[in-house]
Image 1 (cartoon, rainbow, N blue to C red):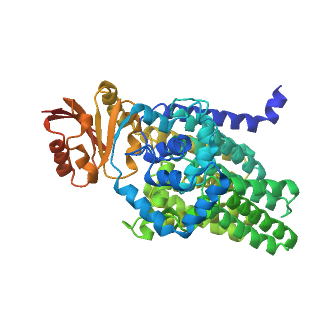
Image 2 (image 1 turned 45 degrees about the vertical axis):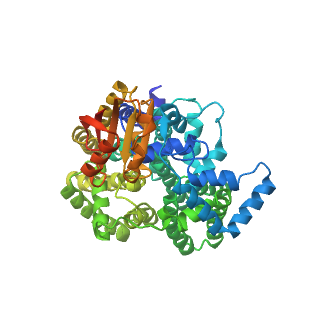
Image 3 (image 1 turned 120 degrees about the horizontal axis):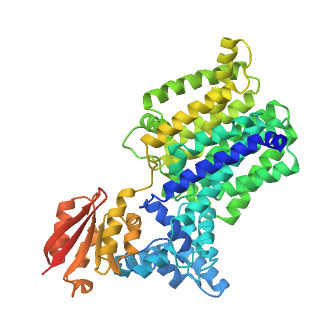
Length: 566
């Protein structure tokens, strides 16, 4: 028994590390109270039939209604005829759409409608064509949303934050396994558990598992793709049939998960093509390139909307926000990486400088320069590209490289410690490097968990949920300043029996509104960030014949009032 434990000790420590970090993440998900609007969109676009928003007006938006009326038909040939007609008469279609949009007016909704948006009912199980359609109208590929729909089908008519958390946790554990496989490839499997602990206990990893989007799934496919390419270098740049299949499937599935995967693939593949050519593996180079072309073609054929998404959509062609210049954005993303590992900025820049010096030294003197280049250069380039193209300054976009950074840092620190110990003690001390690294990682992790909180918990939202529970029988008027951001308040919509969602340019709908006719009191939720807040608040009070109003909560996102009417 002792011999078996000794032989499998590395795997045992990896399992223990995964358990520790998974338990930590499970504790944090219980503390999650609120939502980013994109998280709610993950549920809605996955589970709402042929529409991806909880609309302010009718069940479907004007475009969906027009498609239903003018395009959709039970006869496939008739539908193709309709599509062909409107492709040739696009101006007519736009005019009809514009006419419909002009007639859109916010209407009263029920919590049942909110629940229907978020959940799968018995007649919606395995409605994957709906998911496909919704994502074709969005700017993201459908694979993650199809998984959300699948898991939601086991929670019929029930919304739970644990649906996507389960998906995220599975891909987190799968990512940890790839980390172990990669360290084993380097002959450093004894460092696997430490690497997993550094990654899994970091604020960055916990945050991205809490964030109910596809970014931990993207992390897994980026890690897997890197591992397969490192495996090719390990095999003396030979690619057998099994490896070709694995590579093709990974590229295909990564592409259908998130388009940022393509950026990383281009960087790794570019380096690999140079290495294959340098090692005179012409046949292998042809097979390697064909794996990528084949995966891309299959992905595009299965989801042709990806062409529009990548090259023509607002998300595909848009650059970053203009508040800071490009250098400022790069700096902010670097500091997000420091935050992810709970490192003060000054110390972070110092460590980065040392690692750059070590990288240059290894590229000059190191034995396996191909591996060093594959691990480090794409991470640097990915960060620089994300800083240029990401629509917002947000940790989610840079998070997929966190485990790769952990691998590079652990290998670098292990190398430095071994050099120092051999110089000071003049002999190799077995496991001394592992012990020192373990102590460093333990210190960083404990410091981070004690002094920082993961992002995307939105604990302050609990106050508004309590108010919604208390006043659920009263009608709620919601005032926002955008077409999409109301999704972040879905937990309230699930509680109020009746609510109306308006924007600042639609407030006149509240004048003599039939839904408020017999209401002496109602709840008013006004987003703090709307322009001309006080002016718009007064308009709402005037249009609803308010006699008095009482502020119930101001949490920095919303101000919630109880309004008494004349």
